[in-house]
Structures are given as structure tokens and as C-alpha cells.
Amino acid sequence: MSNINGCQLRPPTALPTGSQADASPMNAYQGFRIFSHVVLGLISAGIVYAACIAVTYWTGISV
Image (tube, rainbow, N blue to C red; front, side, top):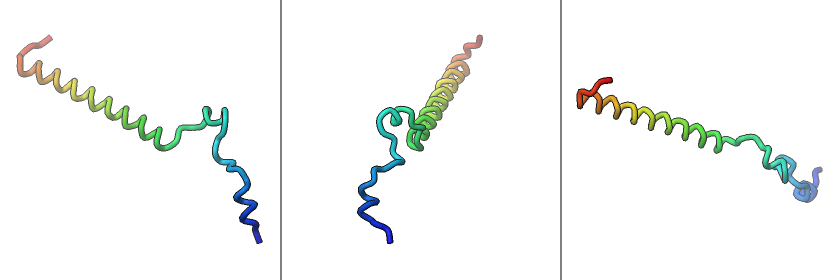
């Protein structure tokens, strides 16, 4: 039979502490956040590119 009180007194070993917290790998939230910023940047670049093409087409300006 296991001692439940003994399990509760043990410190968690899976959580990084001190200097280990700085070197911890990226978690899923941070990865998703970086990915969403990359996608947002690509969409923004596409919108700017499409706007340049539209202005060029509508005004008849060509390089």
C-alpha cells in the first residue's frame, strides 16, 4: 500500500527551477504563437503585394 502523504511532500521533478527555467524548450503555446506571427506576416506581405499590383494595373504605370 502506498503512502499518499509521502507523495504530496515530494517536490515536483518535472518542473524546471532556477537556471533550468531559462533553458527550457519551447512549449506548445509559444510554438503556436510564433507560427501564427509568421502566417500573419506572410498574409500581410501578400496584401501589400496585391495592393501594389492593383495600383499598377489601375493606373497603367509599368516599370
